[in-house]
Image 1 (cartoon, one colour):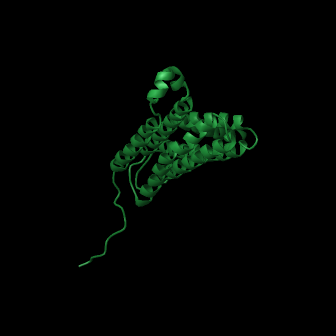
Image 2 (cartoon, rainbow, N blue to C red):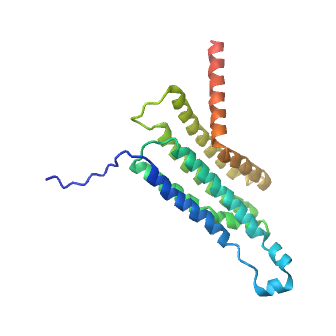
Length: 225
């Protein structure tokens, strides 16, 4: 009798990974509101409006953190919608992605406090570090989409998967450049992060744009020949 335990993971649907991941996303996004504490009775008696306005940095942290985790979930859903099989490597990369997601509230809170006064440059770079990790995770996940074996795809589908990989590869370059731009201008760095938000918020649109640009480049090369 062979008692050896197999270390391979049988190809399967990704439902369990997505269900577990959605739970982590839900908890991470819910924990953000817990950082906003109700004013104390003394603060309420002295002036509720003033007490609420004093917590503006907490509201900012919730806003930034919510939408950061939201775009993470959107891209996670987008990538897994393209995957048909699981593997042990995919489980590990997805686990690290969830680790980054749970890390997001920390730099977000520091950034919001820095807006009140402090070392804003370091706070922006710490937030940028989270974005670099995020872009790296989604790039790694997109590699599974691009290199998925054992399934017959049309050429159009393969081009789309290639476009997904390229979009996330661009996001890594974008985040690294933005990280160093903060040394020169914090404002410019923040604007670049907002632009990156748009890429992560509309991944389908950006993927189609990349595919269109690739086709135009190929058509121009053919025309020149």
